[in-house]
Amino acid sequence: MIKVLIIINIILVLGQFFLSAERSTDGGRLSHIQSQLQSIQLANSDLGLKIYSQSSLIRITQLAQERHFVEAKLSAWTPPPVALKALP
Image (cartoon, rainbow, N blue to C red):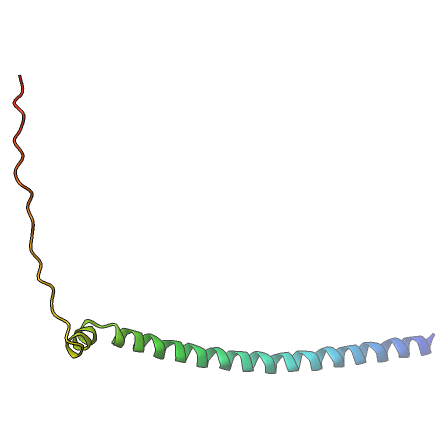
């Protein structure tokens, strides 16, 4: 009976050791993933700033002037007046 208890105890200790080792490697993986997430978020914010600067009206105006674009001349067109039909 004591031999069975010792074997069960050894199995449980080995199981606990295995689970502890597995959890410690999971912590390392989680730390690596978190650092990757932070670097991606930093790159994302940098790209957002570049998008804002490239799409600003000042930048677009400068590009248009460099490419010799001309401002459109708008003219308003008003339809001719329509006579109202006289009611009886």
